[in-house]
Amino acid sequence: MIVKRFIAGAVCQACGQQDKVRAWDDVNAKAMYRECVACGYTDVLAHSPSEAHEIMTRVNYTNPVFDEDVTPVRIIHPGSTH
Image (cartoon, rainbow, N blue to C red; front, top):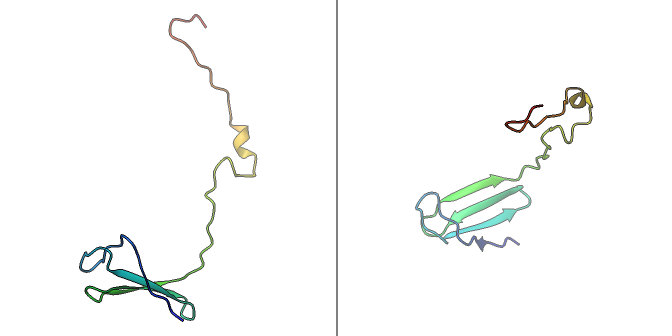
């Protein structure tokens, strides 16, 4: 059974009317459909299971190559003799 639901605050891409767009999922087609009840515009979004990859940073990088180039920072105050 397909249940069509209105999307609160959604604006139609074709006619620009708000709160006229409804959406529903089709599990067999692995897609989500959107439709504007004001102008009849339809849109299909494919469900693609994409794997989210974490961006590599120095925090989550396991190779210690970043530690080799680390040097301490010295803060020099103006007017100091050092």
